[in-house]
Image 1 (cartoon, rainbow, N blue to C red):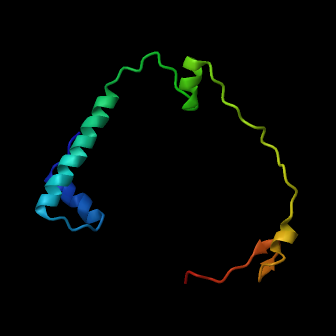
Image 2 (spheres, one colour):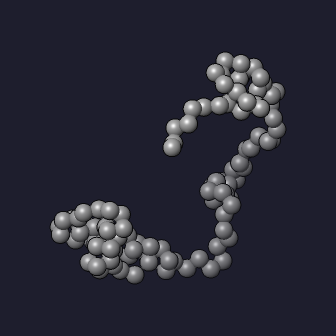
Image 3 (cartoon, rainbow, N blue to C red):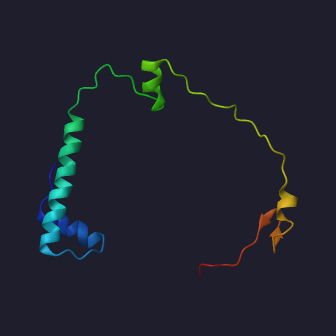
Length: 102
């Protein structure tokens, strides 16, 4: 896939950018270079490669490493009332803040 001048003009218009002709040509080159890299990556044969659930999996397989995760348990008690005591306004356990969007 490659873009042309009209594509760059349309993208610039959608992004509300005003590009000079030399900037437009530079963008065209950079975006087309990016698409060529994506095309190269897409052409890589991944037959038989098992997808990884986590990037550490690749290191774990080759180096015998294991991902150490702690158990997902609550370690602190609920202190909502204590934490909200200094708040200027609280209602039903929620902090009240001034409206900032009209």
